[in-house]
Amino acid sequence: MSTPFSEKSAFGHIPVLLSAVIEGLQPETGGRYLDCTLGRGGHSEAILEASSPNGTLLGIDRDKSAIEESGQRLSNYGDRFEAIHDQFSTIDQEHLGEFDGILIDLGVSSPQLDRAERGFSFSKDGPLDMRMDQRQENSAENIVNNYPQDELTRLFFTYGEEPRSRRIAKAIVSGRPWKGTLELAKCIERASGYRNSRTHPATRIFQAIRIVVNDELNELRQVLDSALKMLKPGGRLAVISFHSLEDRIVKVRFKDAAGDNSPKDAFGNPIPPPIGRIIFRKGISGKDKDASNPRARSARLRLFEKFKTESTI
View (tube, rainbow, N blue to C red):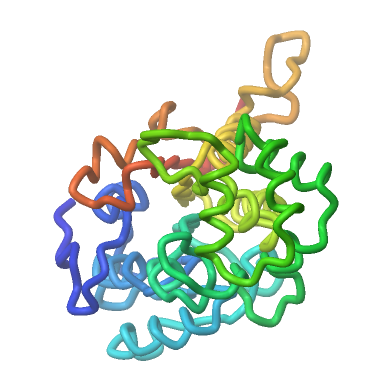
């Protein structure tokens, strides 16, 4: 299917794996779609274009600035577009109904990375914040200044998969208090001992802190369960992940829904029966499919399609 939109809009934003998302979701005229991570609205705009003239889209984001910016971008679509300021883990079928296609893009949005005051970037000096929703209490500053050393070590190893977590945690505790992102990043760089690394030594540590601040993995587990229930028969769910922890959760949940991980009855049939099928078993790599977009290098798109009728297995 051809895509009647530019991959780079007037907003200067290039959504990750845009063409692959549209090809995977297959938006149709009159369809109803859900973007659980609205961001700047790039994916949503493409879905609305592909489902013209009367397809509708509901967008959700926990970041108020994303709601405001995407609202401006998508204002021309009138009542075909609606936005909700909330965590995507709150979605449920009872209140929102069913959808022909659902998208979950787990990447940190460009404005969050580019705006130093949000505290997500170790290349720009800003406060230790990292809250996607400014209404929540926990922040990066609280974590690095108040969590015990053993807990920091565990978090860095578990959520950052950082093999030198212990020495980095020790250096952070010794250097307290911390106020800014650059000074923390320099501390991590010195403590890590990495030389000539392809990625900044603070990358995995900042990832771990961000995951904990926003409870990202629990949020992901909840939204996957809800999204699978909210798909209409024949509907598709697309998830873009950016690191192995996220991708592992998505892959396992899709396998569960496809019956791959289920126990078998006496006839070899999965219990409970599968509700759909996985499209592209290995997913779609941003490195291969969207090589021109630097922020797609670590991305992986996974797709799941719900059966049009109940399984007869």
